[in-house]
Length: 539
Image (cartoon, rainbow, N blue to C red; front, side):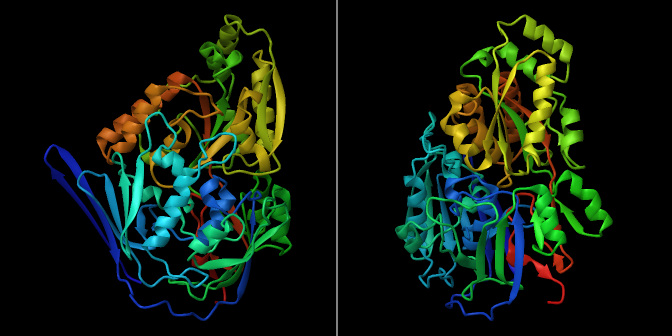
């Protein structure tokens, strides 16, 4: 289907009004059934998924599987990440930036046969808005909350929504958010059928409009187990192109070596997050390894709201103890860069030498000696039983960081936590840690994804309560792309550095290995690949 794009920018009076539109040729007829493809493709994820509902977690595996099932109003361009039409054919902002209209496709049905229309979109938006996940007792993560600043001192950006007519939806905002179409490319904003919402099955067996529908999902309240598969099948009512895969199976194999063995023995056709020790043998064996562009950041989190690390000089001593270049060299694939900030290089924010302490163990010892620290053990949380884009082997990463900190005089108490409950533990039991390992995988192509997730609201993980920082993050989010926005993000970076609430470690690259029958794999820097775009040899 041919794509047509348009971008229009007008200046009106003293303010700038942005009208952003995209359109593509659209059929107004009901969807026609397609001949279903027959190939069976098995892909090994590097961790289990706690749910299939992307609106309640930032789990990569959940989002990857949800991408196949739930379409959003807009989708990311495979090359640039910019928003392109999906369930909406065009969109436009009002002159004041406080409302956005989206024109919907008229030829789409959900997997259960019900029509996709404006009322279905309203039902999804109301569900996301009703979920009170700023309550840290839940341990859940809501991108809706982060993007729209729900539960923050600044107040929510989201005011509501309305169905203008059967095929037009309007989002109402309390203040401008120019990055809204980019944000809506994330799987967390995928549309579920009202029947699935009503039956509360979005987390176990969601019903969407995507290229694949659920054949075997998850059990209620259990999440995915290691070795368990989520099985999808091609939808004969899909409004787009299906590709060659008729059955798509996602199996969870958390161990890096076992994923390698599964590929080489033919159990799987591809796997995510190639381990460091596997790159050389895969190259010798002629196996395709595709490397993502660096679009995630690994960091050492510091809980500075209570305990000994309330002392900012002690936090600086801790940072000066860490040899980030050695960390990158020893624990990440080639192509990984040492992080000097929290925004990946593709955003070109000026002044990335923002002043995090470099590796200086002597300076760390001096700061430690001048502090009130009395050898109290620092509780260091790290995940076990999974590889992440920000850390292929978190246990090994913890071991090196712990050794570096011990060498300069810190006492460390290891607190290993299974990956399946790691995020929940960080958010619900923040008093149980002083330090933690974590990272952010870029979810949509805008700096606000990184900054909103970490710094737009007080987070229990970091205990960071800087109103000045949150104000800067919000100012940058409200500004359209351009030099002024870049300057605001430079100021955000400097403010984050001054707070010393976390130390960015690396911008990692990661690899996907695929077998010989895979002719083309739709690699994405976010990890949210669309498997209907996969191509197989012989098809």
